[in-house]
Length: 102
Image (cartoon, rainbow, N blue to C red; front, side, top):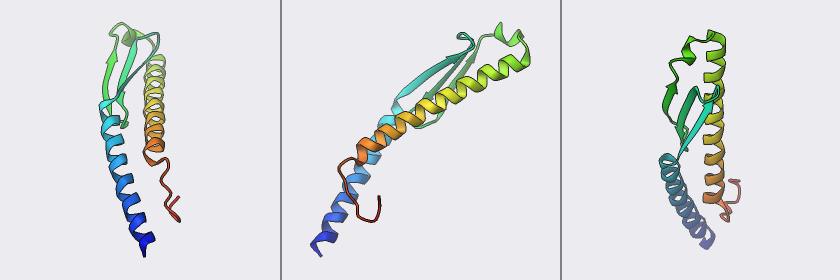
């Protein structure tokens, strides 16, 4: 049953690496703007939205344009956070083979 012990050690190592990656992601911030800088969204690598800033002058525009710009910035920020998360998780689990798990 030496194989089980090795698997347990690999699983523990992977858990530590994932926890470290998650902490690093939570500390990493991304800023995305839309509407020529009128909408700014800040998000961390864990996908948590940290701030939304709107230019007051931009709010005087047509509601559809404002909505589109906000939605575009939110989508871009979410995509950046997701890409960073996936990259960090790939690094955290690289080289660890868990038969039947991956």
